[in-house]
Length: 315
Image (cartoon, rainbow, N blue to C red; front, side, top):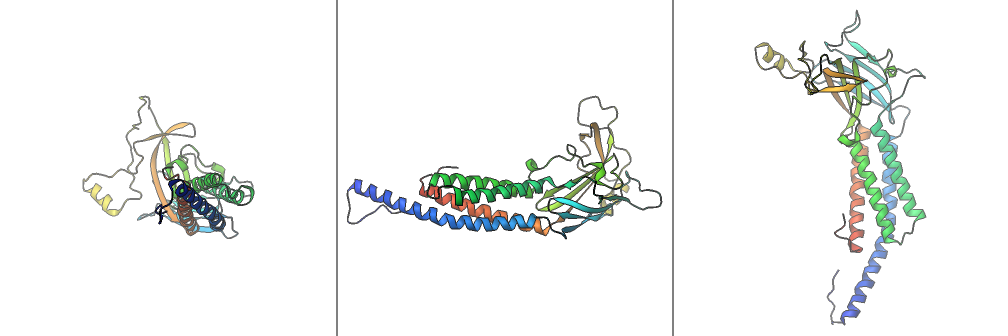
C-alpha cells in the first residue's frame, strides 16, 4: 500500500488516511473470506464423501514384490476392513496338511470384532471438526471481527494439516504394530498366536505388514540384541540374492527388524519373518490431494489477513 501522496498533506492527516484505507481493505477481505469459507466447506465435504462408507467399498489387491510369500485382497468400507483373504507362504508358518499356503480370512460373522483403520477414523474426525469450524465461523461468530476470523482460520489450518499427516502416515499418527495387536477373533479361524497382522496408511496407500514372532529365550542382559537367528529365510528376496548367498556372498538380513526385540501380547519377542505390501487406494489418494489444496488455500487466506492486520511476523 503506497504512502506517497501528491500534493503532500500533513503527517497526521496522512496517518488517518492510511488507517481509513487499511480499515476499508480489512472490511473487504473479511467479506471475501466468507466466500472462501463456503468454497472450503465444499472441498471438505468432498473429502468426507471420499472417506464415507459405501455399499460396494474399495477392494484392494495385495501382492508381495518378486515373491509368492503374500497374495490376497482386502475390502475397505469407510474406516473398516470388512472382507479379506490372504494367502501366506512363509517357512516359519507351515500351511495345514494338504494345502500349499497358510490362509488368513477375515471373519464375516455378525459377532466378529471390527477391524478398524484408526488413521482413517482420525481423518474423518478431523474433517468433521473442520466442517464445524467453518459453520461456526460463517453463522455463529462475528464475521467483521478480524481477530475471531484469524483464530478460526488457524484452527482450521491445524486440523487440515493433522488430517493430511494421518493420510501420509507420519510416525506420530501411527500406533506401533506391537502395541495394538489385532484381535485374533477378527479372523476365521482365529489368527495364530505367533502371527502379527498390522494394517496402516502410508502416502494414501493401505499397508499390510505380516510378521511371525518367537519368544526370546535367555534374554537377561537388558540389551536389544536377540539370540542368533536360525533357519535362514529368503522370503521376499530375489533369485539374485539367493544365488549370491549360495556362492558364499554376504547374505542380506531377512528383514529390517532382525536385531530388535519387542513387547508383544505381554511377552518379549523377536521377529522371525516379515512381509510388507502396499496397495494404492484411489479414494485416499484423491482425499489427500484435496486436503493439500485446502491446506494451501487456508494458508494463503491466513497470510493475507495477517498482512492487513499488521501481523506479518506471526507464525
